[in-house]
Structures are given as structure tokens and as C-alpha cells.
Length: 128
Image 1 (cartoon, rainbow, N blue to C red):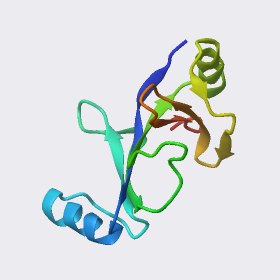
Image 2: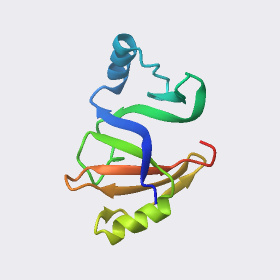
Image 3: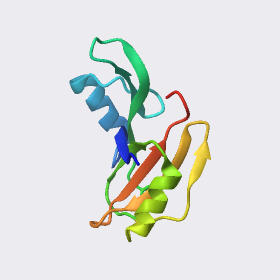
């Protein structure tokens, strides 16, 4: 079974998300959108568009989206078969959160790493 197939997104908290986004846009050229992040589209070795995106997003420091982790970041990893991976992680004794989500963006599940960081696992919709 394949486990992680890539990075789907990097999410982090900031005291002033708008100011931080403006800094990244000005100094690093990240194409920050009004929703507070950017979607980097993938390309193949020749530079041609390929299916897939990596999300970069800044949120408010007070949110609880990363709970139960107290970290200021969360990495989202792409996976091929979320249900099978979550079952394997449970069998291996990992702390897998019971809650999962499905939406037009795909399926999501979470595991807590040994340092207490919440790790998001994402199975994109078919073709992405």
C-alpha cells in the first residue's frame, strides 16, 4: 500500500495573517489570494501542467483547526487510499483521530505524531 504520495498543503497560524500574507507576497512572490493563501499548481519535468496542487495558507492564531495540537502549523500530506492508511496506522498503534471529512475537495483524516503535532492526510478527488 502506498502511504504518503506528496505534500498537499502547508497551513500555519499568524498573529496578523493579513500582514504576514502581504510580506510573503511582496518579498517571496507568493501569489496570495483573498482567501488567505495560494494554490501552487503542479508541472511535470518539462514544465507542462500536471494534475495536482499544493496549498499554502495562513490562518488566525486563535483558531482551533489544528487542535488537539498546540503547534502553529499543520502539514497536509496527499495519500492514495485514506481509509486503508488510517486502518494501518491504527493497527500500528498510532493516535488516529476518529473524525474524518469528505467534501468536493476530497477525503480528510488526521493522525497525531509522537511530538503532538496534528498531521492531515488528504485523499484528493479522482483525477487530481
